[in-house]
Image (cartoon, rainbow, N blue to C red; front, top):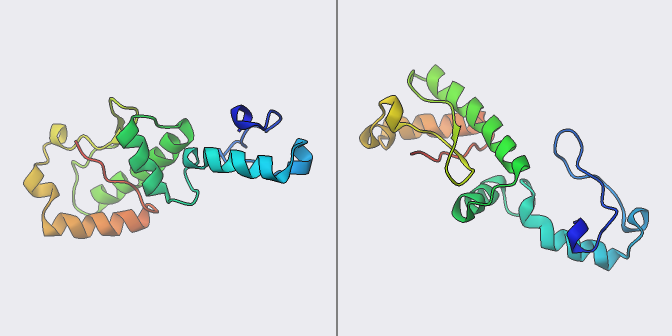
Amino acid sequence: MRSNGVPNYPDPNSNGAPPKTSAQELGISGSQLQAAQRACQHLLPNTSGSFITSFEQCVATSDCPQALVRQAMTKMLTFARCMRSHGVPNWPDPTIGHGGAPFFDVTSHGLTHTQTHSSQMESKFRECQRVAGGAPILMG
């Protein structure tokens, strides 16, 4: 935001959420604030695209904002615990990949492609994604 014309834009709160401020409080016009928000929207984990869309963009570009990585790790850890409790005891916790995005290194934990793409596993994925609030399932 600061590099897009809002020099007094405050830091996010301790949860990583952007501050709720008005253009007047920031000493700029409404159109300046809107332009900066549009320019920076893709950096936020929960803006008009979804979290999954932002995560997919981070994976594709290897440009993962830390707030997005933290949110993905939280969701993915919940997902991993759920998978283990649903009968997949060797489901790994997520790790950070080469491009900065978290992923599940399932092959190093003895899970095969056939296992992870079975209909039984797909139903567990759906259930655990629901439990974890839309965790991404990026496997390697």
